[in-house]
Amino acid sequence: MIIKWSEYVTSAVSPEGYPNSDLPEIAVVGRSNVGKSSIINFLLNRKNLARVGEIPGKTRQINFFNAENKLMLVDLPGYGYARVSKTEKERWRKTIESYLLGRTQLRLIIMVLDIRHKPTEDDKLMYNWICTMGKPHIVLANKSDKISRAYLSGNINQIRETLDIVPGVPVIAVSSKKRTGWNETWDCISEMIPGLIKI
Ligand SMILES: Nc1nc2c(ncn2[C@@H]2O[C@H](COP(=O)(O)OP(=O)(O)OP(=O)(O)O)[C@@H](O)[C@H]2O)c(=O)[nH]1
Ligand SMILES: [Mg+2]
Image (cartoon, rainbow, N blue to C red; front, side):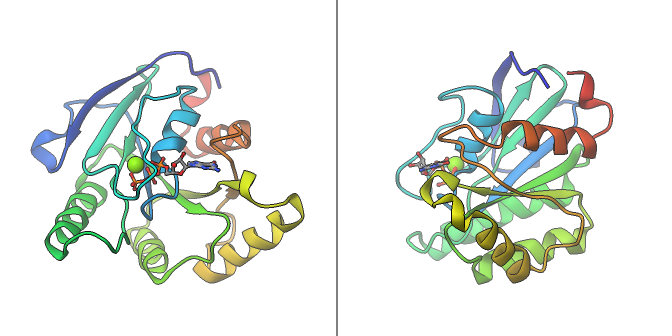
């Protein structure tokens, strides 16, 4: 997979704001601060295309990024961030749900977790929801640079077991910081969205 060109398209909080495009979309979902925006930069070989934040709650809208005019990567707000108001949480939930439920261009969901931590109840809810919707998905366990290699497979197994990940669904250890797992991730994406391979 060669990704040379990408650009920010638009931001939206509801369907009226989604871009008018037929490109297949890949949505990146996960808890606040797990590195969803960083993963988008990592996959697109960019440093600061999607905005990254030290403090959870950085991404508050749905941001669309065009890659090679072949697909759209979609950065969603994170869930599970305790330090925002109930109203704000409810607004983010609606933003995320209406995109995931209503967007017909959505072809694949990338669920991002922090490899260091056992998935939370929020993660379980999200994962069950993805399964109930029957959407094709893969799981990226990010921040693998933060743990020793000896723990990688154990933590991946813990994620598989805690979320009861469907057999055959890939769970890939990545580090968007150290740029590890890039090829494996794009190989999986290409397999799951036939036709992309020629990018
Ligand atoms: N060590 C390490 N830090 C990372 C990695 N990926 C992201 N981070 C850091 O994690 C923090 C959150 O990254 P973001 O990409 O903003 O996370 P997000 O999931 O988009 O967060 P929200 O938009 O707030 O939901 C930032 O300080 C990143 O630099 C990684 O692979 N390794
Ligand atoms: Mg973000």
